[in-house]
Structure formats: C-alpha cells, structure tokens
Length: 370
Image 1 (cartoon, helix red, strand yellow):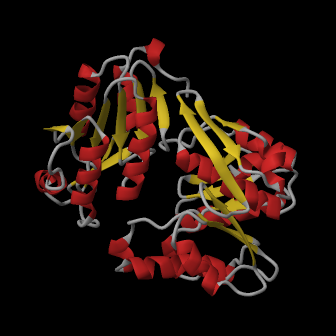
Image 2 (image 1 turned 90 degrees about the vertical axis):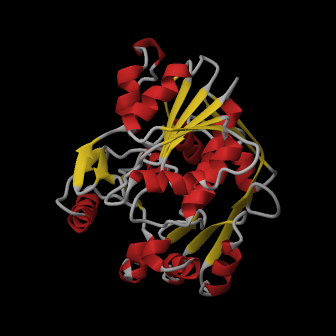
Image 3 (image 1 turned 90 degrees about the horizontal axis):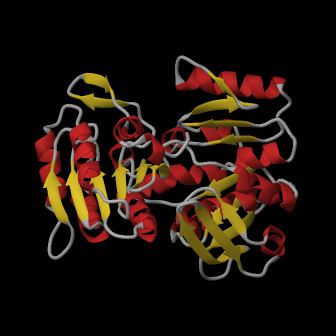
C-alpha cells in the first residue's frame, strides 16, 4: 500500500518484503534474503527512490536491523501469536518488535494500531523526540473508521471527522476485510507523516490490488479465497471477513505447520469450529511430524456445538473435496499457506500452490483474473 501511494505521487517506488523485492515495478533478484536486500537498496538509490517500504521481520529486528538502518517512520499493525518457537514467548516477541520504535530517527514518527493493547506498551518506550500517530476502529485516534463494509468487489471505509479523514473521504478499496481497512489507515498516516498529499494517498490506496495469498479471491460462484492465515488471530479475522461474503455456508480448509508452535493448534481448531459451518482439516507443511498427529491436535480444540468436520490429510484432495460440494452461494476459505508455492513433507520440498490447485479445478468462467 505504501508503494502504491508513492507511485500515485509520481515518484519512483520500491518495496522490500518477505515475498520479495521490487524497484519501479521490477522484481529484484537475490540468491538469499541478505543479497536481495542489498540489491534492492542499491537499485532504489540508482532510481532516486525517496521512500522505501520495508517489511522488518521480528527476527531481523531482534538481530538489530533497525539500529543499523533507522527508519523515519515505523508502523505497528498488531501483536498476535506467532514465532513463539523462535522468540520463546510473547514478551520476547514484543520486545523484538519494539526495536523498530526505539530505533526511529530523531524527529521520526511511530504509527500505532490503538486497537491493539500492545500499542500502549510501545508508546511507553518510545524516545521523547519521536512523534506518535494512532489509528483505530473505536476510541480516540488520529484516524478512526466509522464503518467498514465488505463485498465481493472490495471494502468501503468511512472515517470519523479529522483533518486527514475529511481529505480521504470514503475509501473504496479493492481488498477485503477489516484488516485491510486497518492497513489502509496505517498507510495513510505513515504517508501523511512523510508529507504525501491526501489526494495521492487516496489514489494509491484505491488503486492497490491484493498481495498474493492475502485474502486473495480466486473464484466466484462459489467465492474461493486463499489466505496466509496461519495464526489464531489471522484465522479468526479471515473467517470473520469471509462470513460477510457468504450467502450460505462458510467452508474452511486448513492445517498447521509441523515443527512449529504446537500450542496454537487446538486454538485454531476452536476458532474454525465456531467461525465456519464446515471444516476440512488437512496438512499444511508437516515437515518431519506425523500429519495425523498434527490434525488430531487441531481437532482437539473443536468442542461443543459448531462446524461439521472432515479429515482429509492430502491437501490437494482436501481442496478438491471442499470444491466438490460447495454451492454457488458458499464461500470456501483455504487458509495457512497463502502465497507459498511449495509444501514441506518429511525432508522433501514439493511443488504446491493452493491458488494453482483452485484454478485447475474451477470453471474458467468463475475465475477472477490474476
């Protein structure tokens, strides 16, 4: 979204994320993440890019990247259960993310999601010379939504009275859900802090199309969504958004990765049980764990009244199964792998893409153009 606003302003643009690096719309290649990072920065300097949008992972932050490359603006979206196997606990995970904000340049700006309680903790450790802008869906904030309406063609966002909110008017985003409304607010405040015109902010946000595997609508009749949701919070939000699109049933296909945080498995099972009408639990990236054991741990969270469940260990077969009984008014959510184009089973890394499987099965007339 930040890169889209930069493009709308007429400037050369660049973004560097865990999905890859692009400068002026061209993919920058590297043999490893470090090389990709360096090549992207070098290409951005040659292109006279003024604003580079950089996704800083918690692992990189813990290793000190923000101290070496102090940003002018830092954005905090949320803190949910993720990477606990790497950091050891939620406190250490938050401490890693906090490195972004204690390292901001003098006179820089922190953009915080006031709906997330962790924002208050981050504000407490912020250097006094750093400004803070907050966004929210309720309560006091510099930018706040009054309504978020989701449809198959996108999301409409209306704002409470504020200087920036009045300039943006009602946004019509091409992406789906509350999370993208929040992302749009975060982007708007970040670009406002950098001096970009509200007209360019609006134009960029409304031109932005979804990132691969992030609530990516692959087909209609039924609506088929591929999403990277691989955490309890992510799955809950994805199912909540999908429910708004469902004329009839909500069908969820998902699993959990092997050799990763085991505690989230029953939690995600409980969320799917309440959030969906039918669940097909399957393999994600089982790695060297027994897929049946992972699935059993997920199923242990499905207690009481809720969705009907079916176990299909083979992920392709699970997707085929969901699409075989889905009607035109249903929504099918295939969660957990998103943009990934491989599946890790045992010691093998095999070609596999949720989106590609859907495109092979669904009638071409029902597919959304990529």
